[in-house]
Image (cartoon, rainbow, N blue to C red; front, side, top):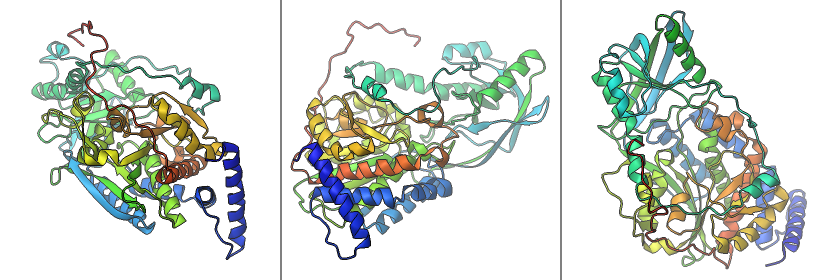
Length: 543
């Protein structure tokens, strides 16, 4: 390979040549990877379709709750987009999921001591109301089953406020941020592995508390429960995980903005309990309990060379339009596919593009892909949905499948729409040299950093967990974690067009190089059963 300086010079020359070619028909295209990357940069920076694609997905279709009607509508739209771009083998791969849930309309209002519309959102997969529920509220914070005894016989005919109201936050951190070099340097820290054999069972127990709470409220004659959402600023979220048939919540559940929730608490503490009215028109759908991943390919010229892959999760929550989580990643994958297809050149390795479903419920789509194509782990089949998330990571042995050796690189995007600043090496020091080499053409776009730390909570995680080369990019935070993530602000307004076109160019460029390189990313060791990190840990039984 040429030195980074020579490589950048070649790119600049190639880009200039293509700029001339735009006004000089018939000028021959230069050959080689540098020319291909120059064409990707030119197309992606000067004729980006990222934000048009983003508006079509988020503004016109909107949120994409896993296995909902809207998710299936978005799948069809995405497959049409990929077909228009010239990709092939476009198909869906179904996996076991659970109920569909479709929210048609809702309203939440205070009716006494004065009329006031309240900022609230039904919890996903919670039951609809039968018409409008109107009742006084009762403040009954409950976070453990031990709390139920205090409220027996006191909740009939009430709408129950189940969260502690706490105090108004006083944030000392910036709401919107771009990384400084010092911020990125702080990420360059090795993440020590931790293994707790009891963690999976504890997470399942804690996660199931909400279902037990709803069952208790139903048995006590309560009409609905209201939770206070976890951010202030009139944001709501509405996450829910009770989507298995026969295991949905027993009463309607609502996620309410902190400011409105605390108003109800103050009124109930100082006078007659306020009355509120809740109307939720939602529909369960048990006609198809399987969700779907969308897959498409640009075929390679060498069937023995394996394949590389890019992915992002296509599903979202219901509070906003799913623009930054993770419409941004999905649009970047679609745009990267367009940029590579536009080259009209076959890569050596097949490039596979995947839009995952079920990520928000425990990486279910990417896990299903792994189990079908790459490797298996012995997980208790009784664990469904998010209950199986921790159990899968702690299950041994890992049994590779024939396709395990064929996946040479996977690149994921799922940290909002902030521009790429580099890549996480996920503790694989052996991979850093080649990752840095593939990043070098994009130094001029500000993506020149490589850090050793791991990232979690998204679809490359289970690939890393079985020793495969799955990587996520370092992205500027913007206002993703502070306000946008899973919230009612997750709209196209909070995406940055310049960042999106930069991300798509780099995603496409990394894929192209990985697909054509004679080198392969070194793999981590195939994990085997670890010993407990703290063999003397004694857990509080109340936790």
